Image 1 (tube, rainbow, N blue to C red):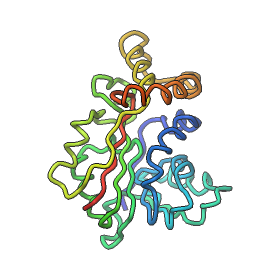
Image 2: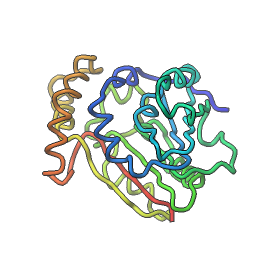
Image 3: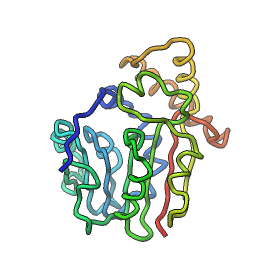
Length: 236
């Protein structure tokens, strides 16, 4: 079992970003079904938001022991809580015969230095026809002290995320940017405000004011840019 002490506090900061969670959940919900593996489950907030009636089982993997211990409590009251099992460790620590219909990394791959190796490992754990879902922060020019402090190795654009799948037996289903106004807010902070860590007020403003407008504008600009990038691949 691999145990990792988590760096940073963004999980608490973003815990109540409900509009954002609902927005990206709608984008990836069609691909979440059967036996699901969530890598880097954190506090369990994403588990609670994404688990659905199409889910048979849900394995929440989290290397940080303190975070992993809180996931079950986060699930209290959720109608699908009995489907969830928590595993402290990493995907590499699982029994090699364990396979899934869906594997997801929600704001996780950027924390993994050898991201291509992780992508390959996920494909080995995926059943044929299954889906690999990755959500990451977008555009490396926005990389700042906050990214560094919470253990991000990089941010991604489409070519970077696409490169992980190059030469692999997968079919790209979706590769799109989300939250255009969030990107502008990040640019303003990077160039002018230079705040190393967003406050709870900043997160509320973004989630309550900017996300609803991004939801309207993103389709109009064909999701050509945004603060986050979502990729979905299906194993051949």
